[in-house]
Image 1 (cartoon, rainbow, N blue to C red):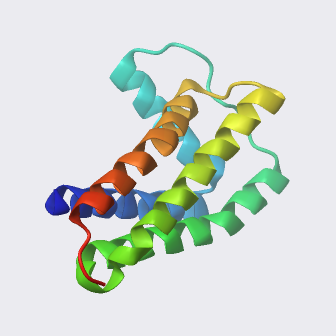
Image 2 (image 1 turned 90 degrees about the horizontal axis):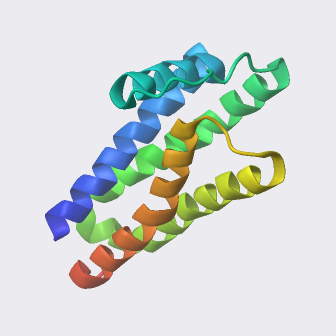
Length: 142
């Protein structure tokens, strides 16, 4: 179970760093567009793309991308040095869950986004409890 947990943390960390780099370097619209097209290719979904993003949204997302990348790096540090950093897992899971709640609030307040982002919301709401349960079962002396 410890290996599974560390693998999930590492996979989430690599994903966060990769997405953050895409958002910072190419911009949110380009990064979202890439993953929307990938989603359509994998699922056969045939709906509209998200469309252009206003400069303010791009600017805001590039700012937050740095923090998302830092979150990913921290996940990788925890996965690598489990003994010293395992106590961070519930906190990191809670932050990820809070992001999913933010997406849910957005769906309620202004409507659903592209289906890819609905899938991401469900991952953000369901993965954190799994991480915490795994952590609870394998944690050792800190």
